Length: 140
Image (cartoon, rainbow, N blue to C red; front, side, top):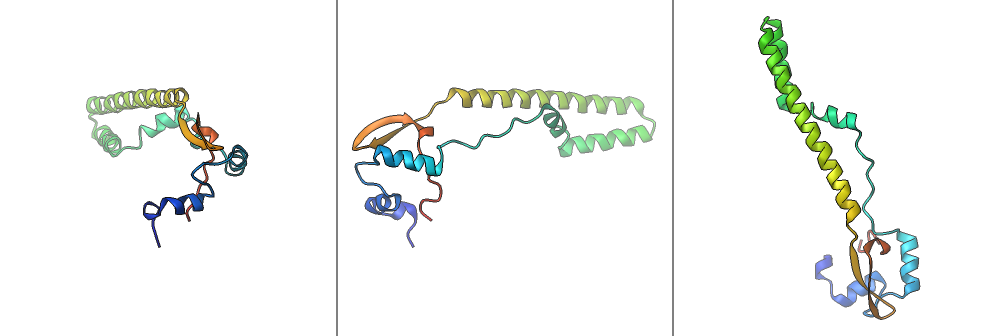
């Protein structure tokens, strides 16, 4: 069995059902309709509450909360308050950073329009990459 990188170019063209002249416009449209556009799956935005709760999923926070409980049990309320303030500060900073990062990733994704060079009807063209078929599982 050959791996994809070991195939001869003529074998790759055969497996993809194309030629050195590329696809016809009609075939490209047919494949786009059959396989769908070449887009990343759209993820639902993470809710702000989920981002906030995610800040507490950390071993360091668990240790600090246990330490706060122990100091409260021992009557060391000043220490308890200091520990809880440290957890609160860490939570606010982490939440703010993740919120900004999420916004930045979405802004970058909206700004980028990738293009692909393709052969259509024997001529080279530049098209939006999303206008290409994904053709998943093409060499299985």
